[in-house]
Amino acid sequence: MLEASIPPNLVQERTRPVSTPANHEPPFPAYTSRFPEHTKDLVMAIIGAQYASAADNDGAAISKILEFIKSSPDIATRPSFWELISVTDPGGSYNLAAIAYWPSRESYEKWGVASGFSEWWERLDVESERHGWFLEEFSPTIDRLETVFSGNEILEGAAHMQEKWSGPIQEHVYWGSMRDRFPVAQTDAITGDTSHNVANKAGVTLRRRIRVPGKQNLAIIRSGQDWSNTYPEERKLYLGTMHPVLTKGMDFLRDHGEDVGCYSCRLMDVVDTDTFKADKDRTFGLAYFNDLSSLEGWSKQHKTHLAIFGGFLQYAKKLENNISLRLFHEVLVLKPEQQFFEYLGCHENFGMLVSL
Image (cartoon, rainbow, N blue to C red):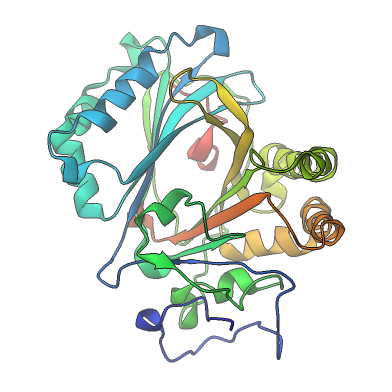
């Protein structure tokens, strides 16, 4: 029995149309998170360091970040989930960070005070640091978040704060299904500001602290792949067919995202928390679009995503839909006040600095 992706407590009388085809039955199941009904908002924060190269990383910065994440005296304010991530950008800069989640804006703010992170962050002096720092923080209300998972066994990201899984949902594997899963889209066109310039720059390091203003209805997508537990034949198939086209699509958004309204895209590796080395069997794309329609447009029309989407359908068909590859995504559409971007000593082609 298929379920609606929007939970009953968030259903409203719809004034915006849906795209679900009549009698649609997805060819394979997908699931979404069911959060406690009292959940009003949550926080996803990315706290990291930027080095000129991976060789410059001495481990001190990530150890300092982990000290704050782990050492809050009030266990109730610690993040519900966190993991380490890394990426080397086209300019050769190595970025190592923690991505962490809190079940409410209130708990995140209390953590910042209790752990000492907020005071430490405000006191950082760019001129005295040997590398850059960055803080990217998102606090959507629960109606501005949608999640989808290929399975209902392994939690990822915000799902660590869910109450339970949904059953198989109807709204997936058709164009427009992402928007149909957003509770806010029942009554709101969630139109972004496409008047801002989206342009890659020269990559000069900025030796100062820069806070980037929030954008109206900025769309954030975190889309993950985990092939760590695939059987040998499926692993070979994934690495030989799916991963190359995924990488090509992420590289396009990274290098030419301005063509489709994408400010920033990073294909991140998940990093081992003991060795600080990348686990190459788990990655996720993290992309910031000026508008949900821009994300939808790239997904539906651009050859790089059509190759990913079409390739996956062929991949699933070859495996007769018995897939051990784990896929997920979480998409946020944010008001300006639900975003915080601050960069200290990072190069100007990083993150939302390209929007200035």
